[in-house]
Amino acid sequence: MAQRRILSLWFPRLGVERVLRRRNDALPPPLAVVGERGGAQVLTSVSAEAEALGLGPGLPLRDATAICPVLETCAEDAAAEAAFLTVLRRWAGKFSPWIAEEPPAGLTVDLTGCAHLFGGEAALLGVVEADCAALGLSVRAAIADTPGAAWALARHAGREASAARSGDAIEQEAHATRSRAAKRRMLPPPPGGTLGMIAASGHMRQALGPLPVAALRLPDETVLGLTRLGLRRVADLMDLPRAALARRFGLEVLRRLDQALGLEPEPVSPARAPLHFAVRLTLPEPIGLLSDVEAGLDRLLPPLCARLKERGRGARRVRLQAFRTDGQVPTVEVGLARPADNPDRIRPLLGLKLPGIDAGFGIDTLRLSAVETEPMLARPHRGPAEGMDRTDALGDLIGRLGARLGMEAVTRLHPAESHIPAKSALILTAAWSEPAGPWPEPSAPRPLVLFPPEPVEADGSPPTRLRWRRRERRVVRAEGPERILPEWWLDDPDWRSGPRDYWRLELDEGERVWMFEAMGGLLSGGWWFEGEMA
Image (tube, rainbow, N blue to C red):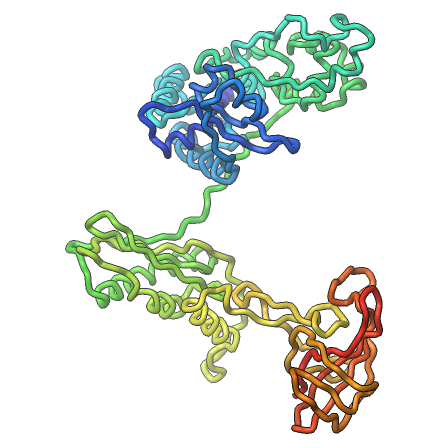
C-alpha cells in the first residue's frame, strides 16, 4: 500500500485577489478587504502592494488608513469568497479526486498514488505555482504524511518561533503587568516564505519541531497560554509529559499534536459533487423564429427530464439560455409550485416566457438547466378514471400565475395559533408551502373582510346610532358582546387600548359590520370598526 501523502494549499490573499481579478487593473493600487470582527472594522485580506506598506490582516481600518492614506477598500463578501473557493476546489481536481475545502482560504488534497502522474511531488508543486500565477493568485503549498502536518507547513513553514521579548511570557514581565497581557491585540504574521515545502515521508517530528505552536490548529486562547509559559515551538510540547499538558490545557492539544504526527487518524472528507442537470443543443445554422426556439425546447426537455428521473429529483426552477452569434445570452427562467420531472408540466411555463427572447442576429446554441431541484416523493398511482390529481392541477395553476406575476406574488392563507381574529391566519407563498388541512372552526362568527380598525362615534353599548366615515347610521340589530383579551406575553402596539368587546351590528341600509369597544389600557378606549360580516 502506498504511503499516504497530503497536499495542503493555502491562498493567503484569496479575498482581495478575487476582487483584483474582477477589476483587472493595469497597476493594482493598495487594496484591502474590510470585515467586521468583534464589532470593529478590520482588514481581512490585503494585496501585495498594501502588505509592502506594512498592512496586514487583523489591522483596524482606522490604523490602516493612517498608515496608508491612499488605501482602497471593499466590503467583505463571505458568500462570494466561499463560492470562489469551491471553484478552486474544482480546479484542484486535476491533481486528485479526493479534495476537501478548508474554509476560509484553504484546500486539502489527498495525493496518495497521484504525484507520479506529474513527475513527482516537486514537479506537482511547480504545476501548482504555474497555474496559480496564471490565475493571479498567491499560494503556499506543502506536502506531508498527514493533513495536520501539511496544514502547518503550508501556513508556518519558514517562520521560526520568535524569541524576542514580547512581554507576554512569565519570565519577561513584572508582576503588575501580567494581568494585562491577555488583553493585548496580537496580529498574525504576514504571509511570506517559500511557495511550497515537501516533508520527507516518516519525518514529521523533524518537520514540525521548529514551527510555532499555532501551527497545531489550536484556539487562540490556548496558543496565548502556551506562549506565556515559554512554550513557543511544537518541539517544546513534544518533550513535555502528556498527562500534565492535558490537565493544564485539555485533551485538544494532545489530539492536534497526535493528528499532525500521524498517531491519530484524520481522514480527508471530500466535498460531494453538486447535482448538475443541464442539456445543450448546438444548431448547425443560427435560428431566429419563435417556432424554431420552441422546437429546440421540445428536443431539450425529454433528455433533461430523463436525467431528473434517474436521480429521483424534480425541477423547482428551470432556466433556458439562448446563446446568440453576437455573444449575448438572453435568458428566461420559471419556477414551479411543485417539483416536476414531466415535460408536459414544464413546457407550458417556459412557453409563456419564450416571446421575451430577443434572437438578435441569430441563436446558435440553446442550453436548458434545472437550477433548483428537490427529491420527488412517491405517490400512489391514480387511474385514468380518476382524472388529473387535484394537487397537480393546483400546482400547475400556481406555476402559471407565478410565471406572469412572480412566485412571491401568489400567496395562500394558513391557520395560525392565535385567538385574535386579525392574527388567526398567516400569509405564505403558495409555491413554497403546503395547503392547509381542515380549517379550524372559530368559536364565534367571524367577519368576511378584515381591515385596520377605523374610529367610530357611537352613542352607547350597544349603540343605537353611530357616525362612520362622515355618515350618520342607525343600528337595526346588535349581537354580542364577545370579549377578546390581548396576548399578555406580547407588547402589541395595536392592543395597548386594553380588552375589547366585539359586536355584530346590522345597519339600516343592510350592511352587517363587526365593531369593538376598547375598554382602555395604556391608551384610551373607544369604538372602532374592523370588518364586514358576510
